[in-house]
Length: 299
Image (cartoon, rainbow, N blue to C red; front, side, top):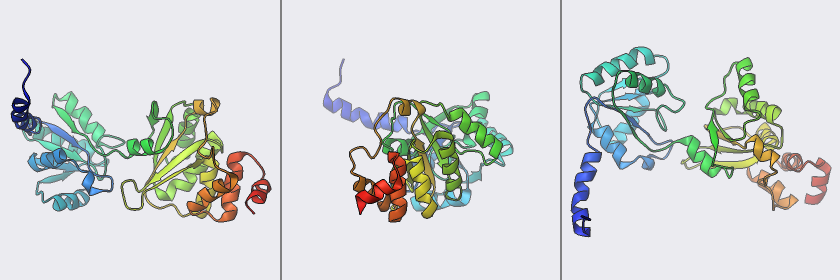
């Protein structure tokens, strides 16, 4: 029999309480903000407040978040270089009935993160794992990119080993899905150069930095344009790179500058911090014409 409106309303608190109840012996993957603290969900706060202990990538960094929230909980560090030993310790506590929240410095645990190994270990030992969804920089950047979102692949960080990097990029050359990468500011120029050499100058890319923060920037351009831009502009903040897939090129999809006049195209690059001459060069790259031809049109 269907509940009337009043009965449904009276039932809601019970449903909510049950859904948010902390269960002993369970690992909770809690997504944390990637920049804006107001993005932390109410459920995440309840879980962080209710678990027996918290496993954090960097306990010093996580302590700042917990202090901001007024939460005091025992913490243990769990990161790439201690994940084997500490993973066993965490699992042992879970097997004794304690509950644990796993968090990273920013974003969703187990995505390009050693939390992946802890989830596998819990699965092997029959320990329940549940997620408390929230921020994910890769998905946020994808939605802002202006590139196809129906099919995509997340590739994390490229290797710093030159041979492994070349092999990785070569394997992606024919990838038809939208490609998502993470990159640190001090490596951005090298990565853009390698991407340009592998995929060509006309491949579209959206560079997202400082997502959800005051200085958030979403820069849509081509790989050639990105290389030209950051040759004169200093990379700042953590980047998410969203690159169009190979099939999109073959199908002749629209470029970000379709509908722009030559002058608007140049002004777009100048708005990203490029000098006029460099902006002219980048626009010429995009359009496949001589630099002088663009220069004459913006005089």
